[in-house]
Length: 528
Image 1 (tube, helix red, strand yellow):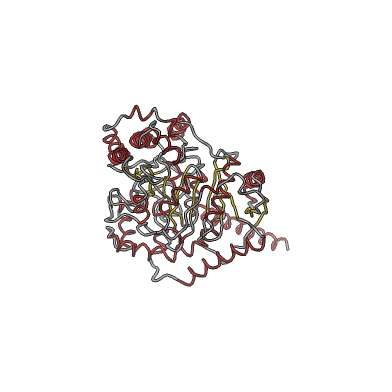
Image 2: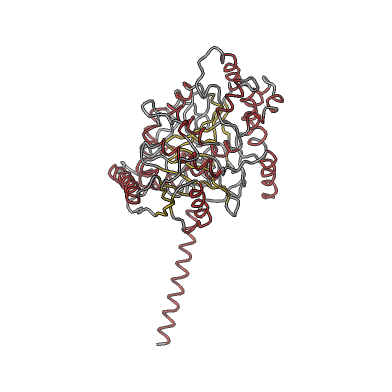
């Protein structure tokens, strides 16, 4: 008997060892590697900016900081209207700020392309201001995630193979911004191919541009992704807002992690034409801004014409008063959950803790069934330098250290697919919509909210709108936000609730210039 027990004991120990080894292997395989400083385009970007700043008075632009830093679009336009600021000074200020904080050695590396005519265009806005009917975004500098096509700047989606690619046509949302009289200042870095290169790649890394860092804790706090550069640049007061894209969390997550507002509209309300795809059934363009009001103004400029505009005159501090808000339970983040609950109650809401049933809802299956086929269709339409996913993988394989530093396992997993399973795509999205709708109906909720991007596996897969608002920093110093969601096309309600929360909490954490520089200097010490 004792011999039998000894054998059983040995087997048990072996099983524990095997289990631990398997767990370690899985953890290592699916855990992103630590961020390391990497800036691949600094010299080119700096030169493009310096060439333009020679044509303007940079010192004078710097004196306008009190009129620009943390000011919303309406306030910027008012300063210009009363003659204390010009569009040229505003544009020069942002360009100069890139040199000071983003493209310095060990800078945050969020800006990946610069409009070479930015100052020239700003001067034209000044000259024509009195002769042209002005729209709300007239002359306002904004940035774009680099998976959004523009004819005058590289549109790489972060891929090394596309590092010189300039499409022949602007994306539809860029055309809309141009019609709205906005000034496209430049482009921002992203997690390569919208975070679909490798499970090992840290958020904010691309083979074309390097690693974007989170200004609140470079190398310590993830910038999150895939709209990493949008979040980092906006929180540093570079541009009025930035267009990001989301498939499942890629707007609201980087916005939350960098203490800014992020809005993912209803999937059908914005055009995706000219945006390099991940999963067209889910991909949605949306603004990252410093305030709810600016996010609304940005959205109004590039939404489809058939979609109603957001009416900001209906925003009040009391919009949440008496509202029943479902709050996603998070046992693993009790600190953040408790803070969100108290903040909602302070704003006048009744909080109902909820846990949706996620059975049958896997957004990853939608992505894996669409990516290859959507990419190859995009490649043909816009004449990219590779023709198939297989060609891209082979190209990267020729110099993996440069072209696929963290691997390309996600691409390799999809390359053998022969056709998409449309039934899985449709049933997954429909199930998400039914689950979301049933949650609100059963609990008689006026809205559903969650910390950061924790609930996007439901709302984003359903194609429903999300709007994240800064809330606080946690005990580890990481900013986080509360994301509000609604059913399809309920953007107005969503914005009213988010504005009320924003005004009640005032949760945005603004980094001073000295703090930005100090955080940048820490990178050197941390790496030595």
